[in-house]
Length: 387
Image (cartoon, rainbow, N blue to C red; front, side, top):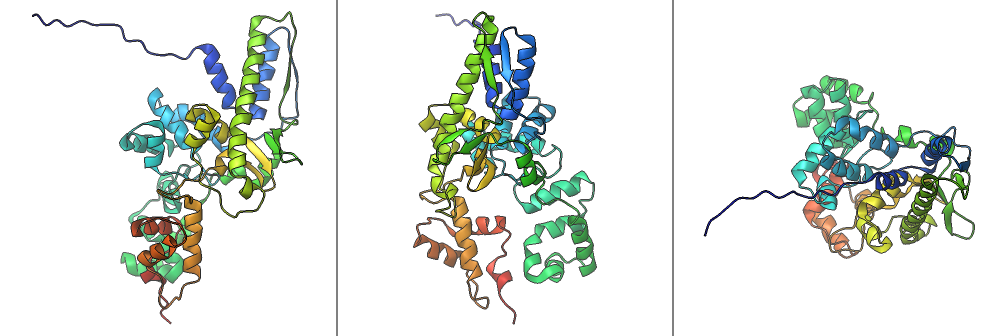
């Protein structure tokens, strides 16, 4: 027997221009789509538009972040992770999912996801893609070259500020009180929620929303933001292809949006205070589309409902392991228990976990500590009243 080495061509799937155009339509809000179709109508004979008034449309947080991906990430593979991080953005500009969850959603290892996140955190304004308040402030101080050891120490113990003020931070960090006060003065110049400059209520009203719930409770496109496309029978094939892609885009958007809205109908209508657990994977499975399609639609499309105007991405809530409850519901329960505790005998994380098990939350002590810290709530020892 003789061993030989042979080379064979490896087939790599590529995205054709038609598929790229279809994906592009899914990543656009109605306002952005109107502008794109206007350019097409100027170039393609037999294609005409009835345009809504979209001249005042501002850039959304999610569109801004998506547009910046190509500027900070050159590896095409890493752009897939980047898009998943964009889909996990909350209106504040912070991430609503952990790095581990984002990595798992697109099938990448955590180390690669962390590197991609570090790249995304270079996007302006500084503070976007932060994992918590301290992380958001740290990114802004680093961008201004003001992340001194004193500022870093204060950020590490920022949760003590609500308990003992500057004196408590000074005691925990071995800094002088005046050093803590100076560091806090610098931190107050930062924007704790940089994403809101894209999603402020007045901006959301300036750009017509994409979807709305009618008086009958049915979901539909906002006619004031969605352009109407007309194609002559004698128009070239390109014009008919654009019309087909637009119809496909609108059908997918409504299918995905309906799955999300119906799942969170109780919250939308005000019957519940917290969102039900919902993952993009679940919506993709029920809608019969890829999870990346759900992410694109959720990150771009805004909905007008009894709760106001917000993106579909805001309607996702991460489920707890082995539970029908969401992370949002857990954080609210933790805050309620701590708010009503005896300050002379504050609840430990272990006691909170035991009490919550009776309410259907299966979470360990370490999980309580993690959610408590993310909400900016100090440990029991720091909450104990000294009166």
